[in-house]
Structures are given as C-alpha cells and as structure tokens.
Image 1 (cartoon, helix red, strand yellow):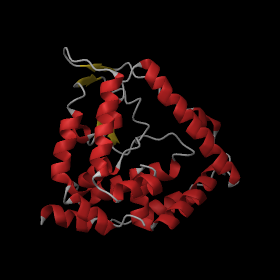
Image 2: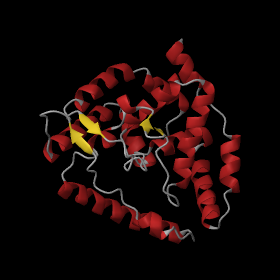
Image 3: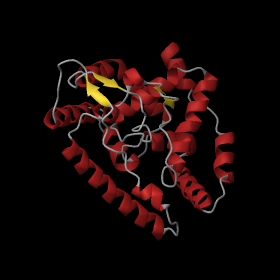
Length: 252
C-alpha cells in the first residue's frame, strides 16, 4: 500500500489542528538565535508523516510557477543525494522558505549536546556504509566525499535569553512528535516502512509512482557517476505540477 495524492489531500484536511499541536511541542524547545551560516542546510531531515504534510501545506500556498520550481528542487535533492551534497530545497540564499514551520530536525540542530550529536553522527556514518554497499550491489560506486560527509556540530545556534535545554527534553519532544504522527495510522507506519521518513521520496512517488521513482533514481545516479546528467535534466524539464487539487482544497 502506498500514499496517493488523494490520501495526502485527505490528510491535509486534518492538519490545522495537528499543526497547532506540533507548535505546542516545538515550544518545549527554547527559542534560538541562528547565525544563518546554513551549515545544516545540506540536509532535508528525516521526519514522520505529520511533519512531511507541512511540506505539502507549503506547496499548496505557493503560486503555480513557484510551486513547480520548488517541486523540481525537491526532486533534485531526492535523485542526487547519494552522489552529491546539495542544499535543502527550502533554502533560498541564507533564508529558509518555511522557517516558522521548519521541521523538528532543523529546530533541534545545535541544541543537542556535543556527545549526543556524535552518537547521531556515528549512526549516520553506519547508515551510509550500508547504503554504499547496497549501491555497490547494483554496480554503482558512490563518491567517497559523499559517504564521508558529515554536518559538523553546530556552534552557530544559541538559546535565546535564559532558556536552556538538554538531551532528555529534546528526545521527549521528538517522541511526542512521533506519537502525534502515529495518530495518522496506518499512513504513518506506511510512510515509515516504505518511504523511510523521506518526504522527497514521497514527492517523487506521487509524481512518478513509487516503482518508477526508484528506477529513475538508480538510472540518474548511475549516469551522474559516469558524468552524464542528461536524464536528470530531462526528468526535471518534463516535470509537471499535479498539485492543483491540494491548492483547490486550501482555497475552496
């Protein structure tokens, strides 16, 4: 079972209340001052379904040309992330297009303790090693620079005022976000098991179908490794905007 555009549209109808609850959870983290060095913005963080729907809420508020441009950026991130360090699709210069509604992973970055952040980085390195082996099994050798890349611990984010936090508070907030998303059963579980908490994979699947999205990613990555990006350019050029139904729901 996969998520369809109709399913996403139906889920978005429940989002105003859930976004309010997300906001309450986010407020358990201290407000921060960010120097906007954008070192963390090479990532589109993993996130549960309830946060991924924020992405679609954003798409639904954009005019057609801007929405298509953002869709192409999301697709580029999805297709290229195994072979190229790219920026988050929501990064515009040094600004975030959805800063007020940014995801938990973005909010927590810079708040984890250095020791716990190293734990997260270690888990990420192990996951990349596994991913590299999977691509090797398909006959594709990923660039070493991408495999070894790690976002450094951030010292450019500071809690504002007297507010402070610790790893336990951050973890409890994350657990509450996941629990809120679990209320979207069975779609939360499907998003976790089939889309791996990757909203860009969901966007690609909605545009092309899951199987074709996976095949396209394999062929695009293989082409990029060989120095040929013609398939990626063609796919992006031919991408159309199927999200009018979401916009109609938001404005109707």
